Length: 165
Image (cartoon, rainbow, N blue to C red; front, side):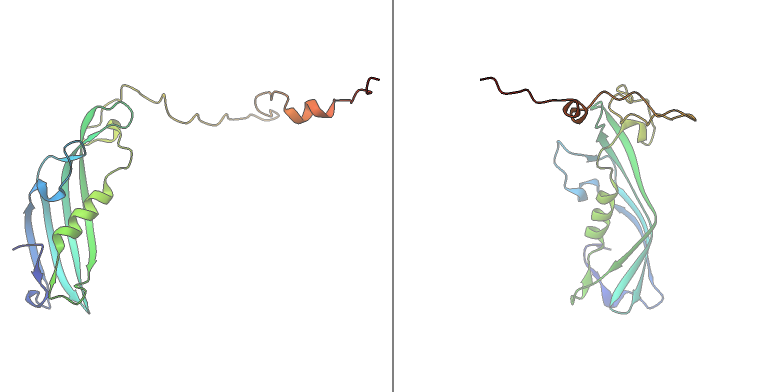
């Protein structure tokens, strides 16, 4: 069945089960971008609900990403389980499940991917060199690291000189 044009009237009241794969090129990504390394696998149940169709199930896809720290390539599996979406035919006789699956998977990709968060995590060669420093823990009676005098303290000690004549 073509997931990009599922006839709404063909979905029985007790639901329609869809199980299969979509090709990796469904993402239409440029060569320099994230790349899908295999098909999108789905196991979806469609159930009519009022004017909408509710999709529930599981969707998975695997991608090759570039680490935001070391620029190394790594794989990450995106798994939407459980998957749920409300599909509104918007006055049409069909729903486009392909577009919705594509967008939901792409939205689940990390904005700043790191190789230590891949499907097979590895130690990033850059490590935590660019991580924010952790706050200094203070013990009882300690007020933290000594502070350098600020500009305002220097101005408080300032005394104007008499104008020279």
